[in-house]
Amino acid sequence: MMPPTDDLDGLFKRLSLANARRVWRDLVQRAERERWSYQDFLTMLVVDEIAHRQQTRLARLTRWAHFPFLKTIDDFNFTYQSTLRLTMLGSALSPDFITEGRSLILMGKPGRGKTHLAIAIAYRAIQNGFDARFVTAAELIDDLSAAFRSGRLADALATYVHPSVLICDEVGYLTYGTDAANMLFHVVNDRHRKKRAMIFTTNKALTAWGRVLHDEDLAHAILDRILERGRLLTLDGPSMRTKHLGLDDPTSPGASDQPARISGIQGPEFPEPTAVPENCHQSATVNRANERLTAPSRLKTVPEELVTRSASAFSQCTGEVVAKLTIRVINPALTPNPDLLRETGPRPRTSGRWRARFQPAGSGRDPPADQN
Image 1 (tube, rainbow, N blue to C red):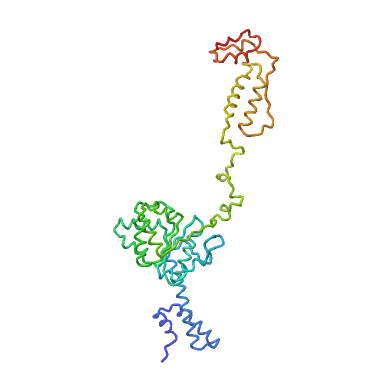
Image 2: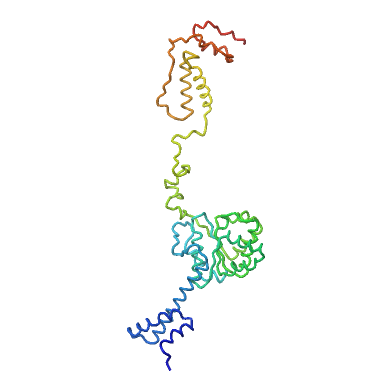
């Protein structure tokens, strides 16, 4: 006895065939219109159910992986890499990478695509039927440290040991606590014993992990377990985030040796020299003497030889071309009032030769004889 048509929904529900329960009526109409056989109809119904389950499982595992973004291997541009090629990642994209518990360390400067590549490898593992987990090194260490202080370290470790693929991102980017090496060693050691795949991204050389994790011995033990069944890949080329600025291209105008500045604040048009010539100090001394001696109340004239030497030293000190230098020389025909030349305070200590050279005419004062 054939069951009524209305009971098919209940039967599909009991078998957990949610997609078949939704599409079977449309498939029946299509089969009658195209004259399908019973085998063709049943095959199409089962294939559609499997495809829907695969899509649902892929979305669920991707959500559980906690990827910050979703990237595939097809989205990665290998043209900017000088040493890395797609053929070098063949084993990492195969199911053997998971079943054999292999590991991978992606090293390079920021913006080179390390996280992109790690997520692409983990997403391929999800497509092959495995689960994955993404976590930054700082989050993993902080979570395990808090769990250790509260006495639930074993439960917290299961979160990072159970997944088939673990991505530990940004090793060495931030500063960690003093127990960072202990917490990371627990994860790496347990996954190494159970042959679970691991992917690490870092901007630090492997020799610097001891300083980053505050323990040289444990850092060496961590790397020893990772690289036993793993390998190191270095990513170079320009940063994908600032590629449009050409900062990593030595031939671009933006990669010149101009000093960096805050946007909107222009640099000085005539920067001051960083090196001071030896005659610069002499020029400054001559200039100060020139300003003091050219005052009308002090002297009626300035020797032309002294002015010429001062202007030449000033031009050489600043490194600029003196296009026009106007020097004001007091008319020698004018003789200042002798009363203005009298000092009201203590007379400056000057040598006899200096006073003989610049003594105003008609003052009636002869320079004293040289004592030497």
